[in-house]
Image 1 (cartoon, rainbow, N blue to C red):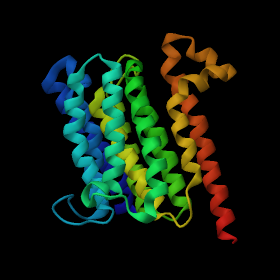
Image 2: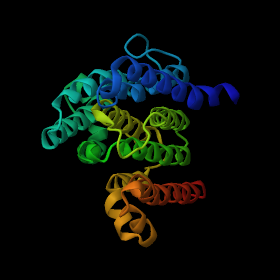
Image 3: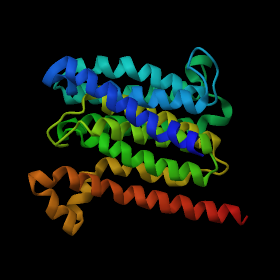
Amino acid sequence: MLPALVLTILVPCLVSYGVTGLLRRLGGRKTPSTIAGIGVTAGFMAGYMGIAGGVPFWSMPPHYCVGEVAVFALPVGFLLNWIGNRPMLLGCAAALCGILTVSWCLGVVQQGEIPPDSVALAGVATLFAALSLWRLAMLAAEGATDVALLAIMALALAVIAHGGHAELSVQMALALMAASVGWLVWARPLAKVPAGAAAAIGGGMVMVAIAVDTAQTCLHPPWAMLVLPLCLWADRLAARLPWIGKLGRRKSGRALAFSLGAAVPALVAACLAVILANVHSKL
């Protein structure tokens, strides 16, 4: 139990924390919005290789497509940082990354066609992936809050995967959560430290890959996963919840209000996953 816990939680968190801290020190004050965001994906990669017991593109570890997407996410996130303060262009590029991530995970890129048994999954996953990564790009103005939302969504995704008995997906989701937390340690205060595309979009690509993998390996359809994208509209949700909305009106409490707003749909998704798992266990 201890080795699995170390590989799933401790290693991704420490690697993300170390890589981010090193790049911040080498690059100075501007690094958090550029290459330091690589720490999220690097931390996940370290955890993934320990969990899966292999190296993407070198060997064929279990659920290898998730590791391969993480490899792609490293240079993609870095390159998208150079788009700068052009939200619509960054949003379109992020949506394209979501579409390509789903295509890679379903084998569309490799085979040149959608597998007949994955047509429905491809349609739904492509729509949600493009929308989610576009929204992550739009949240860049809110600082590091989007990485906090990734951590919350990854935790809920782990609960959903556990309900569907997709245990390796559980570990990968927890590894992404831990890597996000390792990066967030350096992002104080959340609202003032920009995440940059390397953290937000790179981490988002990994999230999409884990979600598609979970949908393919769960013993029953993970309907609860459809609720998760609502976390990315945490600002709208927070504004409609009385005490959270009041907190969000203060600049110092905006990041906390965002996180609490995202926790609501994440909790709903987790509870729904537990209920559906109990229903399917009795069938």
